[in-house]
Length: 507
Image 1 (spheres, rainbow, N blue to C red):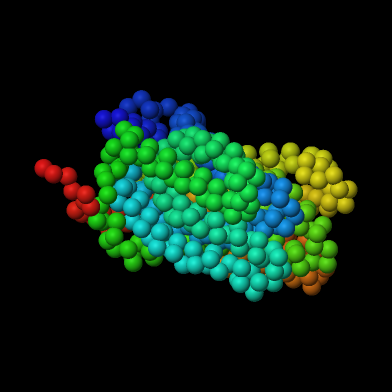
Image 2 (cartoon, rainbow, N blue to C red):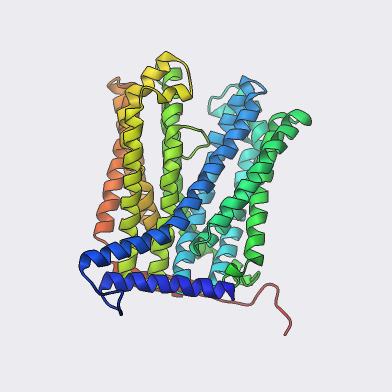
């Protein structure tokens, strides 16, 4: 009954927002346009806050958890630190981007189904996505198993490649934890249930630190022990969230047990998942290319050190850009949920208002962060290093960072809007063109051909991101939200198949 009340309350709030924006309804729709917009903004903020804030905490804890593993490995020696960094920022990021991207297909379908009150379909989408991601994990596990020859082929030294491969072996269970976690996470987010994931992850992290020290130092398992502990922590997170789904009254209407429908229409479901994966993974890998290219510059150590302080997006480093970006990721999650829910509920005005409200709010926060960063540009580097040369390089790159922070306050949120609308395939093509046909070639040209070094590389990459952001703004501005409501309904009708349960209850 608690789940029913929650769903009813959520729909009532959605109805009030649509009434305010349309100027209809008793009492709520009355008043001047400014008063209605102020009331709508206050209502939308109340809906966004419990979505965005816990999501920020979740992604920040993920960064801290991976960073803790690197710190523990770093105490073993420089080679072990390099191996853990390579495992986390190279091998792991590849799987993370792919799995998270494929999981965003659930974000679209679950968000719209919840808004349309097709609650039982959320559990079907969760299971179907888990089956698909588990199958995807098999070839990824094979890649991890052969990581040493792959790293040697990519030019890594035998010592680091061997150590990184040892670390990667312990991350194989983490692949399948990703496959279970991301569909679960999106399933909960679609229902505006985010705080429990943050609490469970915090508890998992509290276990992660002592277990890592025990495995690495107490049992002497070294790199393998560190990565196995990280995998175990992810499985604790998965188990905790799944138990919440099964036992919480809030999920009573959306989780009705295992069903054979999880295995139905997998090829069609895979198409949406692959489009989602391409959209997000291209973004994740794009910023890894910057790190690889920076290592080819004439003075790679200074370039890489300055980037470590400023920018390591999506990767588990405690850089300034990473922390600022996590705030936008929280707004990204809120945008996809709010837009998807409103489209599924048949509220075009509310969907459009939510999209622009969260974008403006995230851009405002990013602008404040950019201003503070610029004012403290000569001091921030000393948090990470005492080197004067690196400090000057960091301050020199500050204008680029400020531009990046502002862009990253807008671009991820618009990507969240795209996921809420189901535009993954279209955005994937935009990402390919802007990132890989404009951003990277421009960065290489400026950085190597014209001798601008790391400034040129970074400037080119920002150019690609700027063009992509402007295109997404243009698309969102021209969106026919009434048509998007119709498309959402068609999408739900196409995927609406409640079939025989896997574990049928006895009548």
